[in-house]
Length: 263
Length: 275
Image (cartoon, rainbow over all chains, first blue to last red; front, side, top):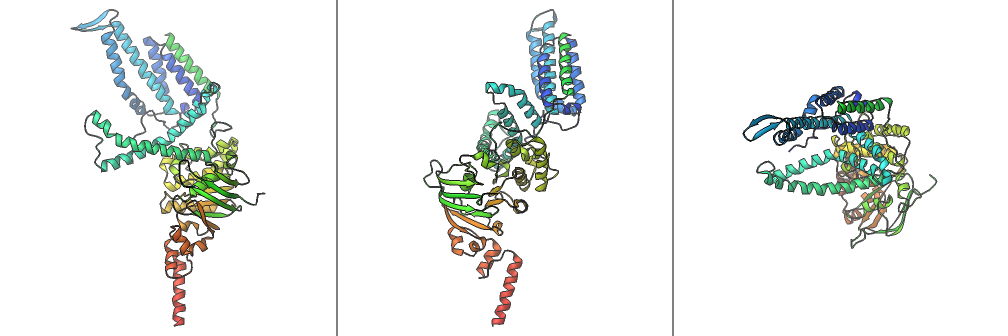
């Protein structure tokens, strides 16, 4: 069993997109994703797709990373497409073959949804591929901090993200160790049907969970010993600077998505 | 430091909730600034409990604790900026996904100004010999390296007191040596309380406390402890190989194989002369 860090991972290369303030990137991505729901013409999607492709090129992240990101959603895209094409029966009939009927409206909506999902996932991938996880957590903390007045724990959420990022590889290593130890005792993680394989995971998950609680306990002690008391009076090591180019990036995104929606 | 004692405990008693026995019972001690004090004793003797009482992670049932003139039970945050604790498992002590962010963690909590923070982080990482490791992720480091990152995180805060809670227990021999030599080099004028199961780590200590069953069984010097077979046996302490061999041969305390060899040679020569 291998625990790859998964797609949608940060790619530490130098690019104009990497250099942007994480807050600008989060807001721009959000704008873009919301805007995408107002795009419904072929020209609009071409425009949005072209902008996304240009950004992917500008990010200097290998294309393979994005293809890897899209692979798991392809199934959903295909399914959505087929459903729309087969079951939406509006507009002129394009094809009729036995009980299968394809109508114009169905084909159109199928294509719209497919394009929307593919562009959306790529845009989200752009954000995570060009933003270091720590910067992303810091950015989220800043963006959520107005909600502190409503008692939303913005600092705590960001700290949770940071700790999760720190411990994912550690827990992965532990999972690998435990699964090897269980395999040595004759556990079989590979064979059998879905149910059998799910059940085989129980002897892996229980020690892993117990171990995670023990770690959490020790980590809490270490954090307290190092003077941690929540976000109060804390100064962050990393500084986020919102520069002119971040404002420009936000403006351009808003413009691009607005134009695509109007087309 | 104006205060002549760095750490003082008076009649310290503590029991964990639900436990029948006392984890610490009537422990009193005073440690002057700059002293290197070892703490040994069997498991469950109260060593880790003592460490946790000294920085306010636990609060005593009765008795008084003072660290650098402050009471950790009432001012834990103030005490923690003066006291650095190095725990046993470095895997669970590092908070941030990158070395430099982790070293900065304590400074972030204290609200140190950013420019100074950068300077102190850089210095601390260099002082433990890990310059160039700033952007490494903790899970890619060896145990000894992780523990040195943790040490750098403590030193960046510039504490007056270092509490070491078995920091080498999970390391191999090489890792143990690399961590301890850094501690020795960097302790400087700080007070150090070093909890350990390895007596050889305390050869250079100024003083050794033996905790057993929650009581202070002895407050002595390493040399006296090492030559007191009765005290060692009562507290299930095992001498390192070389001093053990010296003791078995009826020789005085020897720390290195060379010293032992010299002592053996001296005795055989004296023995030959006597004959």
